[in-house]
Image (tube, rainbow, N blue to C red; front, side, top):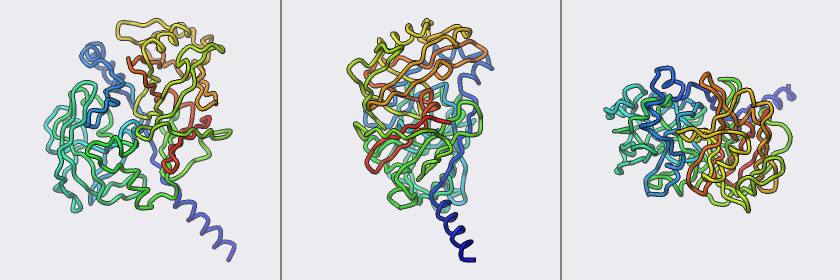
Length: 376
């Protein structure tokens, strides 16, 4: 009997540590627009500006990324109202659409109704979120937010009153930011920081697994590391700034030659950006090294037949090499093949989903650092 009690208590302890949010790998805005035959016209109107959310303007910001495909479900209020959100390590606020929003983008998304929640409280601050193309405006409020079985009471979040037109094509209803409070609009304490403050997680870290194949296996784990998602050791990299999850990158090499980030650069590990984004000249150089040609929209296209023979690209971070084969950095669709290397016109690099699919990412806020290990 005693033995079983020990096993049981061990299982209970184990269950307490792990709070998993399954992520659905859904249709991207690009795919939805292509199916409707309006992608070409849409992208002329809404040019992709991956750096929009990284301009420090005092407002919280997001970007119009047509290729984001990972969503998880959270709930807000009592009784709970459910929303699908992008878990975004490149921003810090939580916001969802509300019943007070009349924009087109709110019509085809789930909307939060404060009057149906007994735990809802209005805040005193307006909220403005800048996008690459337009903005979202609304109000701050607080309520109970439930994420993967963790209930955070009195979490401050934004409810939208207007939303930029391109949001109508996004699958997710809103965004849950996982970067630091230092960049949160109105200095709101982010959801994860609240979990840590209230001791709702057993460790002050969360980890992200993005599956490249299945629509179902991706997940965010709050308070733990799921060892079934990676192989080999975890390489820990100290943060160079605790605003975003920002680290120093040593170089980008192809066949042993430095092709970008010569002499070092700064990079952000960002689940809320689909591509790997860098300075224009560096990205152009990488794309020409792998044999891509750039079209009028700045997309680097390749012949799908060439993927097998294209070179690996190695990103060296903190002295460790993280290598991406062509099968990882080229995306294939019925419209052809293109690389996941995008230009930004800024010095800051973003290692987005193209990178995170290959490397399980652990975000540790205690001694701020990022752990990366080869994804299974």
